[in-house]
Length: 638
Image (cartoon, rainbow, N blue to C red; front, side, top):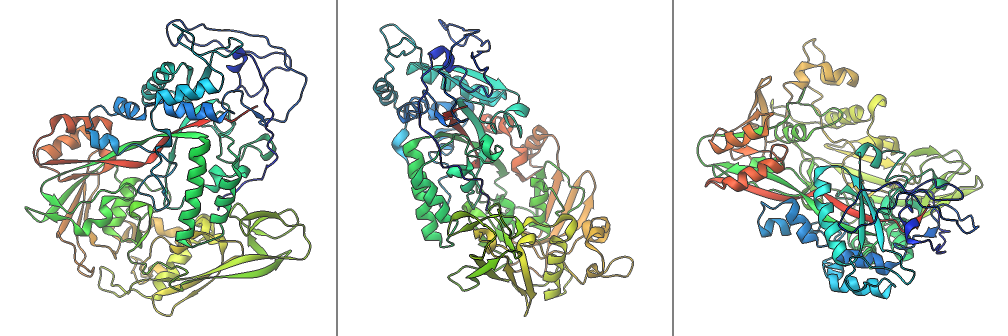
């Protein structure tokens, strides 16, 4: 759980400035007696460029970001912007080489992808409709004079907004479409393309809400972290040291209540209902417009069957089901060669897929959900493997605070009680939920023929929760009991209440019996030595469908079917060829040297190559990826 200091005292006073001063609404530190407008480039014909304006302000001192934006504070204007932007044309401009169906799959109408278990759409409310958008602008007091390009209000001010985003070519391409769309509705868009280091910096740009319209990318995950994005307390403000990801400053009471209620239940049906409320209010208020999902792609020859691309999981998670038509070997092209096969620290996409092939998986993550693999069944309240008790805690007890961090309870510490943030005053006791979860693992045999034991789970815990690089969840573990058999029972600290607790806190299992070159067993070696153990990192034992048989550095990895894995993989061998040049990889796929290319090798240029070539026997799967582009509208001025 991630939450932030509450700030519910958001004012709705409206400060009316002239249209010239509107251009500077996103400046974080205007001078006390005047507002400087920086020079802007001429964007369209007949655009008047203002270089400096001095405007006396009324003598009031509102708190930062508590004054409604003169334009975007009006829901009608936000809704009009949504109606005026042709997102289908935007996608077509970015991906002109894709067919209609592929481009349609990239359309998004919520802050969740439509495959997501919590998605409650479709939401046609803000479909492209410039007539509807123009009508909303008229009702908001912005009319379009005969032969005029841009709308003005009764005072003659021009309807102008500034868009801030990075200077990437992709964003310049779609921003041009947005600029044209808004001009058709009579809205002047001033585009500010900045270095990503400033726009996405920890103390600048987006995080400081230094924008009017702001575009950035956001990734979807199985468990939405909407507390950090759509609650009133997650608005970055000077008062909370700019913490949170609610960059638009959206504070809707019903949505806020629903998100907080989500944090208080593990019932999937109820959680979906609550997320539906958040999405409904999000669409009604339109604090941000979802633009599109970035396209990803995989390519393979007709020599392979059984590949099922998925937006939230690598296809290699199901490689045991791939079938080869001719021969006995699947030849995979990958971009990056790992230093070792064990997933230590930062994991590249290539390393994650290699681990799925030659180590094993505890679960998969298709369609933004979790499916059991070696960890089975996944624990739930319904199957009795998760239990929750409310217990009283007092000063000095270890708890998990509102930020999901293990702390000692004391005066001033914020915790979550029934979805509400409560500040402990140091007196008496408060009641917090305590989760106990039983994790069960299939009985399996390692690739060397030795059966897995409870000691392998204990070793996984010791490695994952070692002090020098512990998994974040480890600090929330109050107690763990191993056994009987292939299972472990974890009791978490009071206050830790997380739906992802259904997944084992240890992402891999390790063979405690593995013999090392010096005569020790792996279980005897301190975890900080593991990365230097060649017999462990370069030729590991597997509980997955394949085991590593050969590794030629700089060229390839050869995997053979794990004879102790059930069900047995459909194809006897897998060879991974490392191809750092994507164009070369495509050529090798086309001439039959490779059977499959991972997503990292099929970028935009390679998609164009394969689409233009369109030769028989080559399959290109365009996948609506988990990363989506969004346009935030800042509801308040600094």
